Length: 122
Image (cartoon, rainbow, N blue to C red):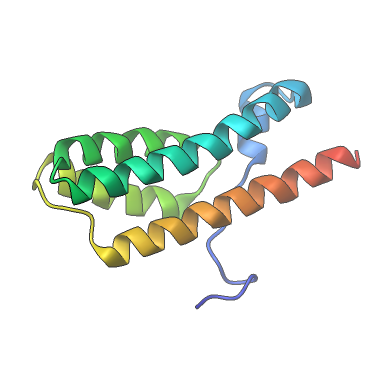
């Protein structure tokens, strides 16, 4: 397991930059980010288990778009693999992929929370 200094990170500041530095808009988007990462992960797992690999791939694709907005490179790479498995190869998401996806999503949520905390102090 990686420690906090070597774990893959994201850059929530990129999302703030995308909204032209509007902190109020960013604060409105943060809970949407949290909910989307939770919901789409659940859908990926559910669709994979149900053999709905195309739907699983679509969810991975949509979540990849969210991950790109915060510069979560490792997360984007994993989601590309899951998307490819579902949409092109019609294969399920492996247990290892699901576990890693859960971990990377939590890292991204933690990064978002930490970044939000810095905004509260500025």
